Amino acid sequence: MTRWFEEIVIGEPVSLGSHSFTAEEIMRFAERYDPQYFHLDPELARHSHFGGLVASGWHTVSVGHRKMVDALSAEEERLRALGQEPGVSGPSPGVNAMEFKAPVRPGDTVSYELTVTGKRKSNSLPGWGLLFNRLTATNQHGRLVYRADLVAFSKLRDYRPPLRLRLLAVLARMPLIGPRLKRGA
View 1 (spheres, rainbow, N blue to C red):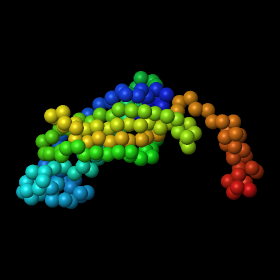
View 2: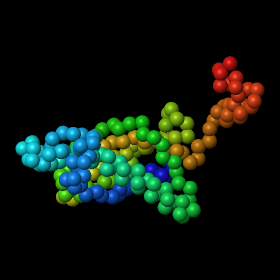
View 3: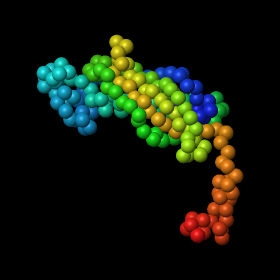
View 4: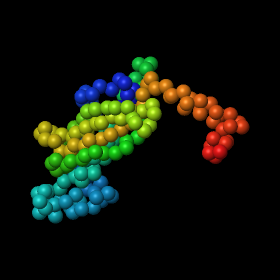
């Protein structure tokens, strides 16, 4: 989220928008990243256990993650336009769970939503918190097609480093002491 860690509300769903999948797009993605016959060939896919052409799960994931990044950027722009300083999103230390619940077919319109399900201050990265997020994707019939539990870092607004870290930062900038600190002398 591009809000400060302290401002993020647990349980507040954020709509990320929707995407309509076409047969051409499904085959183009599969050709490049997941070349399996049920993503590539409509005729062969008819005889698969899917009963027709389906999008790669990675295609569904990639679209959702792009929607998430676009929504974060839009929120940052919105906050700046209001004269506010947006929070700082950090990297993700991982994905805790990922499920492909139903196939995505040509003509499906999938809506994505992100909800923060929990948060805590980081034990290993001072000044940062961890966000636990659920990303869901639902087709036009209301059927869940994809769900993932993601973890991401978010910067704390009111973080002040402990005195010893502030002192080390000052010492590191001093010409005679800084190089010795870097060498471990």
